[in-house]
Length: 111
Image (cartoon, rainbow, N blue to C red; front, side, top):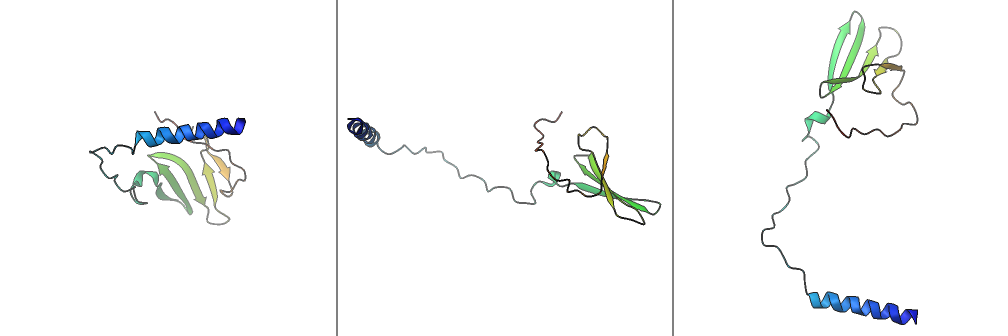
C-alpha cells in the first residue's frame, strides 16, 4: 500500500512538472563579469616596511595601516616574531610562526 502511495505521488509530481512547461526565459539577462584575478585586490596584501635599528633589522607588516606583526632579525642569533594576536597593540614574542593548533578567527565587522 505504501508503495502505491509513493508511486502515485511521484506520478502526480511529474504530471505537474510536465503541465507547467519549460521555464520562462527573462529577456534582460546579462552575462556576469569575470571573477577578479589574483592581483585585483592589492589591499589584502600586507605592506612591509624594513627598518634598521643599529645592527638589528625590523620588518613591520601592516594591513590597512594596522601593524599586526614584526619580524626582528638581530645581528647574532635567530630571528623572532612579535605578533599582535588580539589586535589591541600588545605584541607577544614567537620564535616561529607555526604555533600548532589555531582557533579560527574572522573579521566580521570593522569600525
